[in-house]
Length: 126
Image (cartoon, rainbow, N blue to C red; front, top):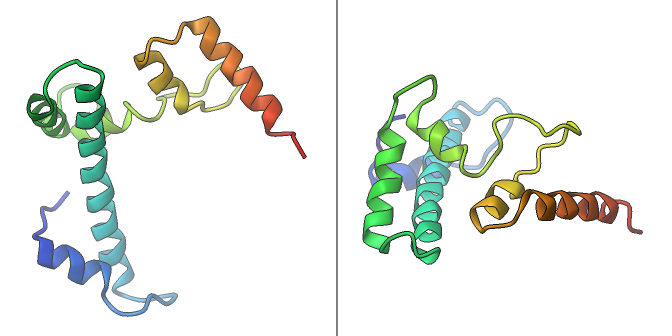
């Protein structure tokens, strides 16, 4: 992914009013994608620091280094996103994205399963 200056990022995000077929739309989406990925790295660092895994300074450095780590079959950005979203659906075919953070917070598999059952029921509340 291309690196952008603050000015280039804001110019691309605010490049006129978006309309269908707009040639600037790809630039706008690219700018927003860059911003979202950078924010994910920031949130990952905050999570590590808040969990007491390390000081924020070290956590931020580690999260940013992860985004550059292309070892194995995935890119560094994919490795970061895998800390937020599962790589495959669970046995019931659902993608329980919140389960990843619950595991990191120390929830047991049984507690996570109970949460998923409750969440599935809550989807039918009227």
